[in-house]
Length: 290
Image (cartoon, rainbow, N blue to C red; front, side):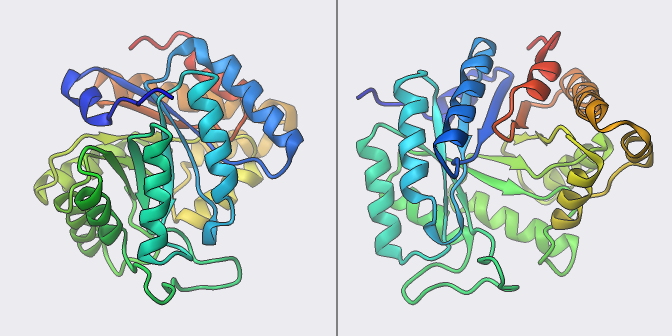
């Protein structure tokens, strides 16, 4: 068992970061697909990969299983996600201890979405209500862990306004988070404005832009509605009129152009929501120099 490298060390090197996100597969076939994608994308040398965590801890064992494979078999630096949903404080500490014993030393700390069918987040008895509390718990008990948090360039759907959202984000940074990965966006001006607003709010940590390659017009409409993200008319029109088999290439090329502009204007790197699929990510990564 090898101990990982904290994101803090990567940030000190001030290199351009590249990361990928996977999600725990629902079955063995899905697992084979995810690992095939990992194998195809490994030559691009991501600095770290993250793996998500299901609502209510529903994928707790699966997240650990595949995080272990990505770490030990692929030699990736793995950053498991952890959410407050469905867990007491003691259970969260137990999970964190399990991660530490396996050699993981980075966590993406999130509040998590309400379980399916519920509109509002409710902590379990003895649980945590906010991601800020989870960041504090990690920093207090695992001081050497690298901690990432999420940020919404166009405002979290549950925040009453943009200023409140920035205030909540700053609280997570003040609690000990090391960097921010953004929710998806399709207009780089949204990211640039968000970074400026964060700086004005006193948020000085790196803000890694998170990009999702659109695979279809219907898919991206659903994601944008869920995250309250805007979809540029140009991209929407291209996807809407294109045949189904051409839409993934349109989405990949759009994201690739985003990456090129982001890196050329000083973004600290980029994070791809790979969706356990390699084709779109491969198209984006071709010709990208870091």
